[in-house]
Image (cartoon, rainbow over all chains, first blue to last red):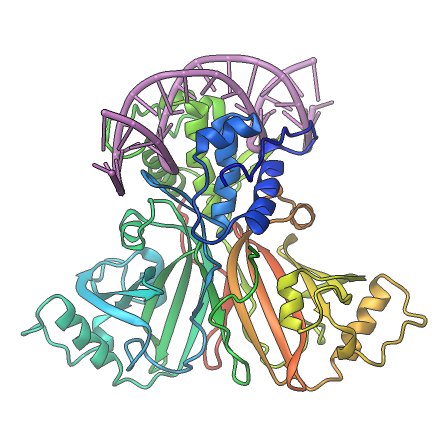
Length: 257
Length: 257
DNA sequence: GAGTGGTCTAGACCACGCA
DNA sequence: GCGTGGTCTAGACCACTCC
């Protein structure tokens, strides 16, 4: 206990030290550690491998990116559980907020959306739209934060009168949206880094790697709403089911004792 | 020209320097630079902002991760074009290698797959399977590398006799696979880092961030094949179309002059 | 207050692309 | 051979968590 990573002197190889280090650590994690265990601190680990702390950190960063480790300031570095499978695919042809989807409604505001969103919505770049904030929790951990942009024309019956801000208004927007007939949907997934806000909600530092899922909802021949959902890239595996397929919500593989 | 990023002294803020730096650079990229332009080198930039080179690099790394910059050793740092939209979604119910899909077949070998793949295929952990290598190019750039694992039971008529290795054999495997009736498919997307091999094919350094798309193909009641496709995360946006949706293969937004 | 990870510095040398 | 980004070092201090 505590010496299982050894004091391996890295032999001089042409391969970068941090890369070799990552491989060595990765194998040690597979064979010698179990989920949740805490590793020795960075200064000790660096000393054991005879490298500078910055070099060790480069290796740890990669392992964290791959979802193998979890680091928390003031606490330490622990072995991460396998990534959580998060279903984003199936539930074809339903609006957000439909009964029993995985999201929790948090609030609503009125903002001028980012240019990219405004273009997708075909609203003017200065035009304000409703934005519903929602969050998604899995295994007790927050895994995603969503901003759902809904232009006023998509929810015509939602008058300014007595729509209190906050979750009540958010629910009103979702309810009105669901009255439209959903004609189609398309999605894109890309890598991003967490904005300060999202980072806070996801319990990560700003700039943490995230998977950004952008969904456009089509109704009445145009884009009725756009959702931008930000998933923690370190802990999530996004799953897209298909009819006839057996959904796997969890990673059964990996990790010996 | 050459001085557009200014010599802005960063005022002392509680926010990390590299974060502020990233914001400043990001805005400069939006307003002052155009795609393909090369930035001043790292030593100069660091000096202008009055920070250490390592700090500047932290900001550049983030911007590269977000697909805003492209850096190449021995060459320099250039402004990246908007991410390429790569369709991975639609084409429902077709096997890989079907006429006119986006992939180019490169070769075939016989290997013991990684444990995770073996589990998905329900083959033994030591059992060898066919693996077809394919690559995908978009706008003249390699964007993805794929390994398609096919157990022998899925291609029973492919006898060992006269199956030359290389692309001929790869095509034979794909052809045999297409004779099965495809019952379903499911996908998962997660963040990974490029293995040395993939990195080479994608023209990146090992460890570069990639989006890993794992697809399981179901036929005859079991998993007939598993594809592991590795997309460059910096340059790609994965698109998942839906019937009734207008596919967008390219990012029309962003970037002024 | 002790211990952790996060930020930052000011250097050095290496690997690569190109002229 | 020169200029680029990539790796690495040995320090320092800060922000946070927990006792």
